[in-house]
Amino acid sequence: MAGRFHIRTFGCQMNQHDAEKMANLLCHAGYREAPDAAAADVVLIHTCSVREKAEHKLYSELGALLEAKAAGRVVGVAGCVAQQEGDRLLRRFPRLDFVFGPQNIVHLPAMVAAARERERQLRVDYDDDTQARFELPERHPEYTSPTPGRAFVTVMEGCDLFCAYCVVPRTRGREVSRASGQIVEEVRALAGSGVVEVTLLGQTVNAYGRPRPGRVEGEIPFAELIRRVAEVPGIERVRFTSPHPIFVDEALVRSYAEVPELCPHLHLPVQSGSDRVLADMNRRHTRAEYLELVGRLRAVRPDLTLTTDLIVAFPTESAGDFEQTLELVREAGFADSFSFKYSERPGTPAQRRGMAPLDPGLAQERLERLQGLQREQTLAYARARIGERTLVLIEGASPRHPGQLRGRCPHNRVVNLRSARPLAAGELCPVTIESATPHSLLAVPVADRTAAGRGAPLPLV
Image (cartoon, rainbow, N blue to C red; front, side, top):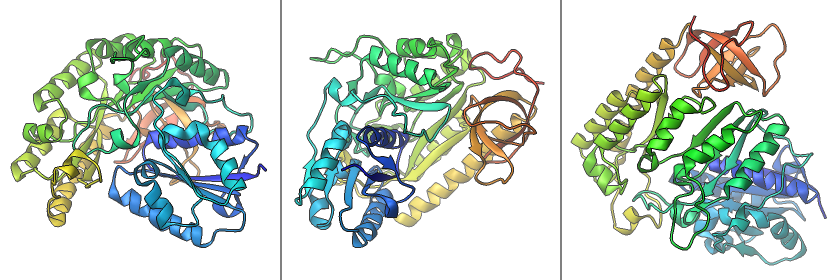
């Protein structure tokens, strides 16, 4: 009964990679990808519940899709909202066929088959905290990677920290680390298919391998996993996201000096610059501890590019607390940040404690001030890189600049360039940075990658 499938995904990088897993599973089940929902027999909407806006977008798109649902077409909802809302989604949308959470991706082909054979709605939401959730097939020959030359690799899932604003422990479960041998073998297979850059993924990725009562998976720490992945022949770049500051140990700090494949970019969420707000958020670190960590990282890797996540207008944030966040942004020297207004999510500790959001107008004003400061810093950072030589991993044609190619440098900045010779997606190209905008670097190719190293930038010229 195979046919064609279409997956509509929004949310974090973990969600993007989960969508890749689902696509690969359906290819192994005999399905082929369709260009859009209208051409598909199976349509999946893959959701995010971290912020309210994403959840509302789901309801809008799902309502329109089900209104025009063709006879025989199967429609399912996957991801965090599916885990969070479950039966409420099925009651709200009677024409929806099935829902399932992130822990049950491995069962997708069976769910699709059951939905096509039966008329009743299905919900799959049992917790799977075993290694079975990671037992997925290798890339199917018919599966086309959306990122040639690059790949995401899941190393752990779930979170045990319960930050006050975060729904992840409820939607993705508690920490489960994947066996290191299985991870390295996946990376080895990816390298054999032409992948040169891997990003290790997890909700709190650097908690990987930490011992927990009754668990057997903590056989090596995260820093050692990075080294083993970097040693795989053909792998030239290693990244990871998203870490938590409290799990950045000395071994991981040293990795930035000792593992050339580890890219000089770290996305290290801080969320606030106020100790009082950090405590209310249950972040488990202070402002001083975060800045001390940044100092140690830059001591071993002076060219490290640092980015972060920030929440403004948390329910207990005062004007003074917000000013401390602005000062932290300046002091840490973030090259970029993802900043958001606090969004009340069901089931979070903050929501259960009745912590009411601040005035929306005040929240918007603070967000605009923060983002204005960040734009200034981002542009200054970009301009400081003019004249640098570096390696760009080509992603394909630039979506905003006709006639140009787009790629990323080791510092994870977007680079646009023109080339006299054809460059394929997944190819590493040495360039000189000629100019900069707040959103990208502009570069021209150079003849060779002399002294490039496997993961390091080329020397300045």
